[in-house]
Each structure stands twice: as structure tokens, then as C-alpha cells.
Length: 239
Image 1 (cartoon, rainbow, N blue to C red):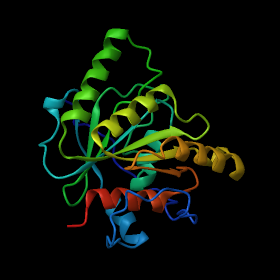
Image 2 (cartoon, helix red, strand yellow):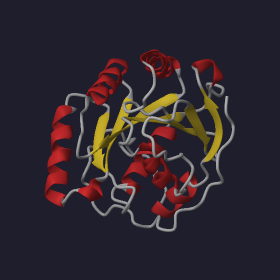
Image 3 (cartoon, rainbow, N blue to C red):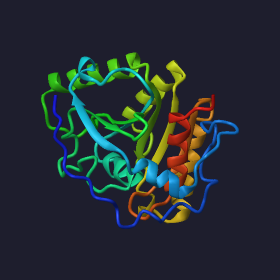
Image 4 (cartoon, rainbow, N blue to C red):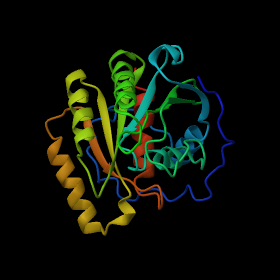
């Protein structure tokens, strides 16, 4: 179990929030939920701090409170998305070698809720036996972690709905878990192609009641406020 993490730096450009709140499905938002202001949401997620890394389920923190997990193929921009959402440059480590992250990393928020960075899937040049071991621990986490309130599935907007994404969406559907898809790197496409990709993914998941989709860019802040609102509503459901 690893408890080391670099010091966290606040992003110098965390104010570029999305001006297009209509770019997503909104089923995940709790009806009538009192949502903090954009400024308060920014301050809330900036309190995220690394707590522990776990190689298997038994090493995870106590299964209390609520947590939101991030999953995605290697090189889809998962670490960059976490860093932008929390307004920190180095909270989630960005490796030049996709798939290098092999542990489940937990980040605590000020009210003891958590964000969870799951191992990236795909490009890691490791033995098949090791990949199967990662898969086993990931499945155990998703199936047995009762504090898991929702899954953020990160997809590169230019290459959405890859086999791994379909596997995760099948799991979400089976267990009726909330899922919010971030189509990352939206700044890499012009608006027309980006919106077309959004519509295609929305169409693919239209029968999944608890799944929503939005465009997102860690570079220019597209979709930032919208994503924060979704995560906050999961971590603070209406009572």
C-alpha cells in the first residue's frame, strides 16, 4: 500500500467553466437538489487530497461515506480530468507511459467523501497474467464497494465506445449504478464533430436510465462546472 503523493498545485486557470449546460443528459442530478455556486463547487473539490493507494479490495479505506470512481482506457485523459475537476495540477499523476497506474488511488474531500482513480486499462506493456490480476481486483471493487455512488467513465471524444467502455457500460446497466460519461479532449475537435460524437454516445446509452453524457476538456475547461455539479449531486444526494 502506497501513501506517497506529490504536493498539489492549484490550477492557474480554473475559471474557464462550460457555458453550454445543454450538452448532456441530466438524469443523474437529484431533483430539487440545492446546488452550491460555481465558486463554492471549485473550493469544495480543491480540498481533495491523496489518502491511500490500494492494490486490492482489502487495502481500500473503510467502506463508509460515499465515493465517486473514475475509470477509462489508458490515454483517454482520466488523470487530466481529475486534476482539472479538483483545480490541482498534480493530484492524479500523469504518466508518459499509458497504463502505468496499477493501483486504486483514493482522494479524500473535506467532508470525508472521496474521489477514486481506478487503474487505466489498455496500453500497459505487462504480462497477460498481470493484466488479468488488475481486472480481477477492478471487478471486485466495482461489485463489492457499497460506498461507490457513481462511476465517471472517461472516453476520448475522438475514439468513444471502445471495447473496455462497453464492458463498463454493461456493468453499470447490470448493477443500476449511476454513470456519467466524460467525452474528454473536446478541444481537439471543432464544434460540429464534437457534437456529433456527443449525439452518437447519447444514442448508444439512451436505454440506460442512470447514464448521462457530456463534452469535457481539461485544457480549456469545457464542461467543468457541469461535471462538478454531477459529482456533487452524487456525493450529496437529497435526503
